[in-house]
Every structure is written in structure tokens, then in C-alpha cells.
Length: 230
Ligand code: ATP
Ligand code: MG
Image (cartoon, rainbow, N blue to C red; front, side):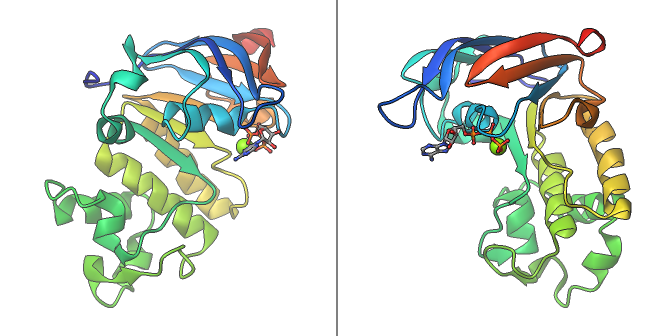
């Protein structure tokens, strides 16, 4: 299985295409050391989100190897992999179930007090207090009852509670009002302390915290290096 703590990430000669034509990920090699933050940039369609999907094994590459802390992800149990790697996107997936179910994914070892503490910490205290049945309140599947900001903060709550070793944020902070943005910033700082992170963005300015930057173009590394030198 995967080790505890921050995970390292290695892509080695990874080739992937959704269909038979032009590869979407074209012989990609890149490395992220445990605990580091990688800023993954590139224009629309360059393959950024595809990298996230490959890491979670929604798809497997046609060739090459993706490893987490030295373990080929194809040899991991899917459930283990998806517990240790969290994906935060603009469209958080809300499942038909209670707030508790949505935040713990049915992990009964996560206590209610922990959940409530995290909600308060993220600035969702008032939102939570207004829920008629507390953690037993049902959420509509698809998250139609949530604002974009609430949904995003809930995604963060989920990350804190399930404690992954790698967090992938796919343009996670756009579309938010300033207050939510500020709460997110705080949450992200805390989140990054004991984890590795891949921050996907369009602009360099969005990834201030990145130790290392990779710029993708057509599924290939166009440039990579420390943030300061790009
Ligand atoms: P954006 O910045 O707009 O989010 P991205 O860099 O995340 O773009 P991807 O979503 O990784 O880009 O898509 C890379 C390429 O793969 C695009 O050309 C896209 O059209 C194509 N693609 C994405 N998903 C699929 C799919 N499910 N089936 C076929 N092609 C796809
Ligand atoms: Mg994308």
C-alpha cells in the first residue's frame, strides 16, 4: 500500500489518449517531491485535468508509469489510492446522502465533533448551524442546494477529514467571492503543511505557493523549473 504522510509523484514517459488520434499526454515525465507544491500551468486543453484523472486512475495511460512515493499506482487498491489522493475541483461531487456521508464517505472512524470543528474552522459554522438536522441533514445530489463557495469549502472539509497525502486542486479558487476566497486561502495554507499538492491553474499568479512549476502544452512539458526562474 501507499505510505502515510506526504506522497511523492513521478510520471515517467507517460502517454495517454482518450481516443486513437493525437495523444493528450505526450511522453510526459515530471517529478514532485513529498511535501512540495507543484504548479501545473498551461492553456485550455493542454492536458492539466487529464493528469489529475490519470493520478486517480479514472483512466490508465497507454504506456509509461505513474508512481506515488515509488509505488506504481496500478498496483494500488483503487479505494486506497482514492483515499490518499484528493481531488478538489470547481464541481465538487455531492452524493445523495447526509452532510456527514458527504464529508466522510462513510468512514465511521471520523467523529462528529471532528467534522463540526473542521466546518467551523473553514468558516462554514453559520452555514452548518442553519442546517435543520445537523450532520444528518440530507444534501441534494449534484449539490443544487449549495452555493459555489459552500461547495468548494465542503470539498476542503472533506480533504481535511480524510487526510490524504496528495491534494490536487484543479482551478479550485476561481468564481469565489472575496470572503470565501480568504477562507480558502487560510484553508489551503493549513492544508499544505503536511501534504504534497498539485495546483492546476491558467496563470502563474494563481500559484504563488508553488515550489516548482510545470508548463504544459499539447500534453508535453513546455517549461519547468523553480517558480522564481520562470
Ligand atoms: P482547461 O484549462 O480548459 O481545464 P485542461 O488543460 O485541463 O484544460 P484537459 O481537460 O486535460 O485540458 O483536456 C485535454 C484534451 O483532452 C482536450 O483537447 C480535451 O478536449 C480532451 N479531452 C478531455 N476529456 C476528454 C474526454 N473525456 N474524451 C475525449 N477527449 C477529452
Ligand atoms: Mg482542466
